[in-house]
Length: 314
Image (cartoon, rainbow, N blue to C red; front, side, top):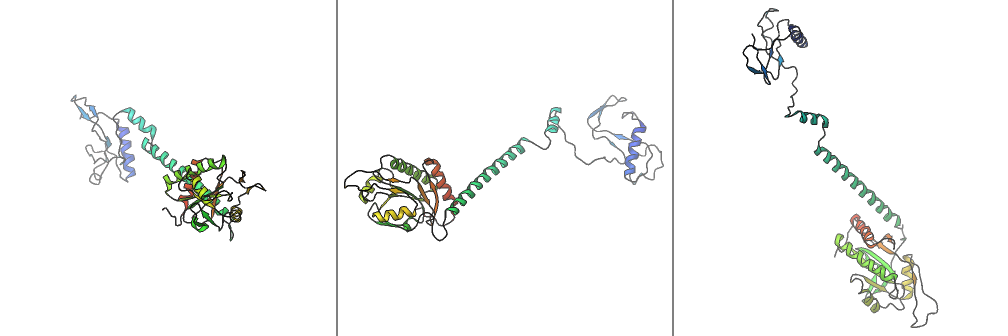
């Protein structure tokens, strides 16, 4: 027959025998190669025929009894591999797939997204652990390191104690109303911090301004003065001994000049810090002048987010 190309008998016979030996089959007969697509040329009929998935015919149970060497003893074809073939439209597509291997654009995007997420998460956890360590270190055992019980008078003339600060985070600042520059700047900063925290964490901070000059800072004077900065700020005053006791508990330095005559103007030296207290009245962190309002507000927001106890938001 001329319906298929001539093949070297020795090569195809050797392949068939090798495959037969792998299946424990003795075969010495002729070998037939079948053709499907793609199209090949038939020299006798001048017609094209398909030759895809070319395979070598192997012996089966029905043909094992055929005498060795008998022509026409064709056996059922069996493919050498069951692995499916990948077909590509163009050579460039096949080359591109080979170059990329198992990677693709989608897998690359997923890889970088997961990596970025892990970096952000571990950075947040590191900062949270640092804040927790600071808060734990500043707490005293038995006696608090900063803060404590006190009883003063607010700018409305009502009694205000350390218990009234609990339930929210308290932001405490010490100053006086006749301060020419530093106190107004710090109170403006406090007002900005209050608004920033409210935007993110709600009404969770109680701002408190404690005077270091009780001789001149009466409740009425405090009320008029604080109205210029923020309505949420609570002004506290009291007797000289009461103020001295509070400053001592908060580790605040203040000094008034000696022998001051009535009506005489003077300045008061004092510490310049914001003291952040948690809802249970424990000291958390001191915020200094080197920290601008947005940065200080972010610190407060982070501490509010870390709090797991009861928190008043009214």
